[in-house]
Structure formats: structure tokens, C-alpha cells
Image (tube, rainbow, N blue to C red; front, side, top):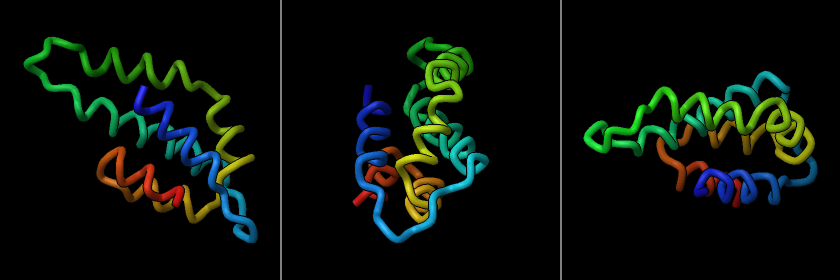
Length: 94
């Protein structure tokens, strides 16, 4: 659920005057955000990280890229791609 909040926060705050991102950058962002979410899963929990990763990526599907291109700026995507945790990625929308 934190991931959904992050996506909404990022998509709601695109700045005017900045170029929209390329679809390939949005695909990278989707993968990066999924990686950030599964990084929080500790091996000791018994949760299969790879299965969780596939489920998250599948749930986002191609719609993520379309939403990203239509609502985010290139600078927001670049900022989020450089983030090392979900909170930092969400801060890129501010």
C-alpha cells in the first residue's frame, strides 16, 4: 500500500515547464520503485521476494508507464530513480 501512496504523491505533483519523461525512464522507475518495496522484506519473514516483485510489477503493468509519462516530469523521475528508499522517492514529488 505504501507503494500506491508513493505513486499517487509522485503523479500529483508534476511541475509545469519541465519536459515529460520518456516511456523507457518510466519503465525504469516502475522497476526501481518495486525494488525499493521488496527491499523492505526481510528474508526471515519467509516471504518470497521474487514472487512479491513479480506480483507488484504485474499489478502496475503498462498502465504505470502511461500514467508516468502523462503526469510526471523528467526531473521527478530522475530524482526518484536516484532515491535509496521509498520515502526519498516520494520526496521527489515535492
